[in-house]
Length: 523
Image 1 (cartoon, helix red, strand yellow):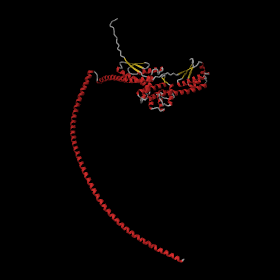
Image 2: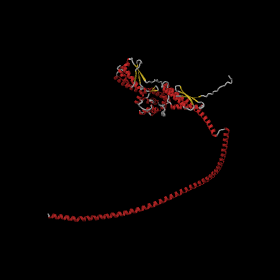
Image 3: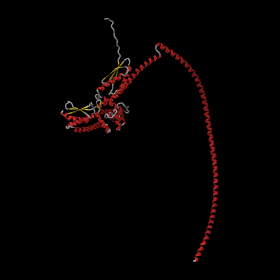
């Protein structure tokens, strides 16, 4: 055991001595190798540096040579450019010198002319003074000979010139007016006559009463009822006055609202056919009549649109169009008038070459505002425009509705066509009628308008207001002024009065010379 321990100790001691020695030897060897490697690298580096210095020196010399060549070339170019600039400057100098010489010459000439002009001006001033003196003398001599001052002579000359101009203006105006009327009347008559010939419609005068025929006079008592209950119920539900008088087998319904009158008529006819007349039955029949009249109104609107060939109208507008069957203007049924205007508009549009469908649509809807009752404020034009805008009608139709009475300027030919068609329908004989009071007031207004003009002695409205005959004072109005006076009166009538058709203005100037022959024989 001890031997083993000694052997182990010996081995460990040997290792402790051998390891340091071996490591030192290996380190020395590595140092020697590194020193040899460093020496060879330093030699290579010195060689590379030497070679780089040689290359740099070569590049430097080449660069210097290129710079010298470039500077030499630039110098030559600058010298060449400088020579050219000098030559141009010399040319400019020569031109400037020549211009200065010419300017000097011109300045001398101008000075000479100025001196001449100054002398001429002085001479002209002297002559002007002489002319003024001679003119003054001439005026004085003329005043002495004529017995008039210069102002009086001017006024007299102006009056004579004014009279001549008035005559010429009146003659020219008459010629132009006649020429324009001849040309325009031919075309207008052709279009209007063709339209009227192709459009034949009936017209019915509207009244405020409806007559219901009875099977017998005994029915009157049943309509009145016990203590008048039946007639009071019917009048209360419909808002219509029942007039039961001595007229045989007839009952008169009176109301200013045609729709209410129509409902009452339908309800009363149903009650007469049914035979059972009492308040409850009356209420039931009135309700049925209201529904029937509303359905009939809608159907009438649709039929009107179909008759004229207009489609795509809003249902509410069709309903309002049907209500126009129960509206009238000067005794002319509004729905029939609208249908007639639509047909005439289509015919006129076809003659001119405008969209026929659009013209018919505008003509059919031009009076749609008349279908609204009094609860909506405004004229029928304003109401119609608002309705067309509400139900998305085209701007052309809206403008035609707004302009058909001249309240708004027409923006298309269709608007003008609707105006013409409306006038044709209204002015057709028998289409419209006026009350006596309205008629007499219009005649009085017509005479009052003409009497307010200077030189008018008296005036007479004749031909049912279609002509105004104006008598003028011969001393105040001459023949040439008559034409202008007639024109002014016509314009004033157009501005202040509303009337269908046209009014003829007839100005009459009459001069009479009266003298007496005296007898020399004594009786």
